[in-house]
Image (cartoon, rainbow, N blue to C red; front, side, top):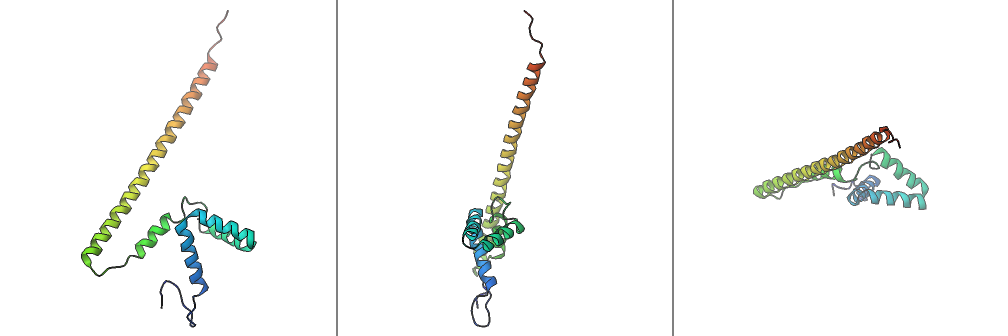
Length: 143
């Protein structure tokens, strides 16, 4: 029996297994796939589209940058299997940990970069605003 999909006594996949596989498939493809599924649901069977919209809002998929970013990483950690070779498994685990750390560091770098760009733009705006106020405060030269 496959542990990834729950089986009924007749050997058929249960509806929950289908929905879990559909959710995983959509998560792998990102937010665009969820939105496309929702739109198609509204077009063909509007209650399905409404249900998908409600689920996306309830699960916070609508407001995340990427549907699969955090949940996929957690899913990967739980799905690691051993090969039977302890040296290889240790190497693989260390490599995956290092890559995840590098990804976290890169994402932190991008956030700092965006923050500094936002600060520079805001400072430029405030300087231009201060210059405009200063120009308005200067008296007009008399002729």
